[in-house]
Length: 311
Image (cartoon, rainbow, N blue to C red; front, side):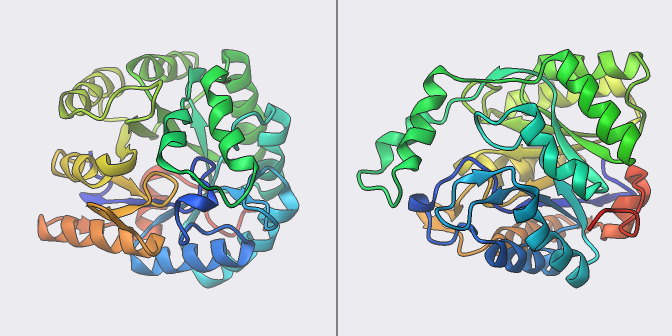
């Protein structure tokens, strides 16, 4: 379901999954995050999905002060929609995860639609030497970790951010049950169309990155939400470009970025987020589809606009 017949490109700039050892191109400092986000917007990303990192060692941080070192710079330099995580990083409390969004009052935030196993520990086998001690610990802890978003947690996020700040959401659905959770909140009137539904494939603990699953997730979303949602696709690692391309062909919007994959091709690291945005933009345009501008994305997702934020 394209927005205005056009494809919205979201770029997830740094995330909280990958660690500094994995790529020299992963943006970590506020300067690097700002620079990479701005370049991604210039390459065609209408929405920028943002996490923060501790500038000393690159670990995920919920500190609003770090966010505020790059958010104003991105706003001044681009017209892109700023979308701040409420997922934060593994092990953060809900209060920590909400601290930066409540201060920044952005147009959009991500919202995971349920609790889930979220396994990163298989990546331990790919690296022998680590730049920082926290990195292997960060991956190993996911062997015995559940990302928590209970119904009460989701209700609080919808109330405090949605009602309190006028923020709308990228509803992140890692499995079929998450679509039904979203339908539950829609039935209760706690979320209102148009919905931006991000279906996520290839995370250990969520639905696999299989073309049949892509088709099934869209089928269920169509059944639950009809014409009242915009569909977007992201896939982890090497599955990124094949699955988001398939989604675009099926009428979806797309998400790329170094949060989701460090790669630009087989065995080749992406040197920036703009690399991936440029690649998917070229694919989309070669399919005779058009990309949406930030303002076209705002109009179709009923966003409040960049002037009504806290940064």
